[in-house]
Length: 267
Image 1 (cartoon, rainbow, N blue to C red):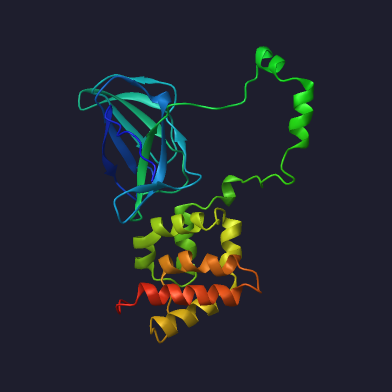
Image 2 (image 1 turned 180 degrees about the horizontal axis):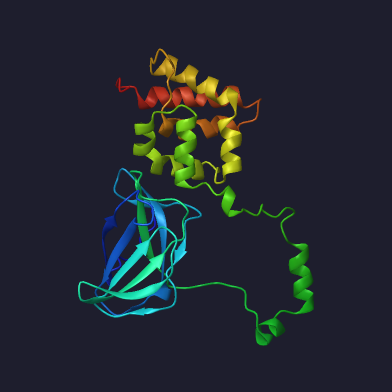
């Protein structure tokens, strides 16, 4: 578990008008003068133990601007222009996430604010360039990994909204999807599925569906082999990533896990 200091110089007052386009917003109040350039905001998945795990590809930098003590900060999730205003007789700043869809109409998805304590970025100045010799440049070029990771476009990111719609399309119960969405996003990311392309490959793996339905029927005694979204996104990728030769072993491992977890009869 990663432990960070609690941010005390600003307070999260709440999320308002969740699920309403152009009105959904996060509201903060500052308790000290601060520079917003030192803070970033992202979506997180609420965990059963109360902790929060950041969701990939949901970062928002708040911008290089100072806020005085006792000011309001409104972050609208939709599109709009940055502007200063007054709210309740206090200075206020309005920001926009520029998201084409709402973010907080689904349980388990929450805003997470981080304070930046350091940064590492390429140095583009003559002094830095002089420190890197041509010999070292060649050495770095020849020791690069043989294959660069794929470049992700915004259209391929595994967003909570897209995943929610896709799971419902696949036949999962809509209420269960809404309840467990944050955990489903985190499950897939932890299992190495972080793009829509990866997710679609997993979703269309018929062998995984059949194997999990068999396990649910035989170990959980579900006559119809009905799957739940949280279990599907946690157990399924283990089978999906296994080679054909390894799937029998993976099935045996999952069967043992199921028997250990539900040994006391929980279903």
